[in-house]
Length: 160
Ligand SMILES: CCCCC/C=C\C/C=C\C/C=C\C/C=C\CCCC(=O)SCCNC(=O)CCNC(=O)[C@H](O)C(C)(C)COP(=O)(O)OP(=O)(O)OC[C@H]1O[C@@H](n2cnc3c(N)ncnc32)[C@H](O)[C@@H]1OP(=O)(O)O
Image (cartoon, rainbow, N blue to C red):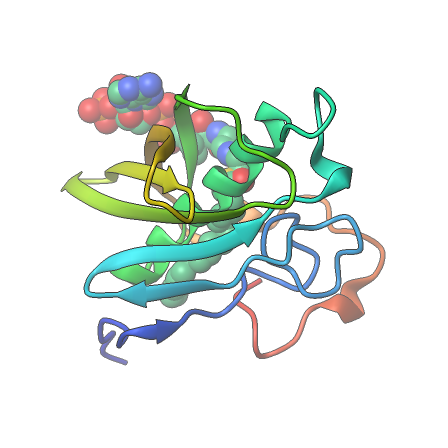
């Protein structure tokens, strides 16, 4: 079967329990990631569950969201890929409850290595954070380790 690049629009979640994008993870961010002109986009609002200092989003929550948005790069190339390295510059505090627009791009590919960049901005366009990541393409065997007991969470609408 020939793989075709996806069209602009919403991309499928990684799987239902994914911490970033899974629709059935009660602790998840429920990200909805879209492809727009070759870039990955997510509009997200962190809430009180994601606070570090009062009213300010925890840096780890931002890292989770960035990692997951980068994880959609697999859809750009038609192969799964996982994080090998993730680096974040936190430029400004991200207020809890404020809209955050995240854009990630695949800058280049070298064999299995995907070099990615991302930026998050607030509603006024001010930069909140930037990030770089190295993802490595893996085969589906990579995911065939121990499985969660609730295998019913998988469906044909998801990859895993
Ligand atoms: C059939 C159709 C499929 C269609 C698929 C479509 C879409 C896919 C969608 C979803 C995929 C599914 C879900 C996952 C996606 C997202 C979830 C969010 C993201 C995550 O949550 S994901 C979990 C966290 N993640 C991990 O759980 C990884 C743990 N880890 C490992 O499993 C191994 O670590 C592995 C396999 C990554 C690599 O292991 P390895 O042994 O194969 O590779 P190695 O380490 O040797 O590195 C290879 C080359 O990278 C160079 N290199 C290494 N580090 C570097 C650095 N920092 N800077 C520059 N270069 C570097 C080396 O120097 C070498 O370079 P060279 O090849 O040139 O020698």
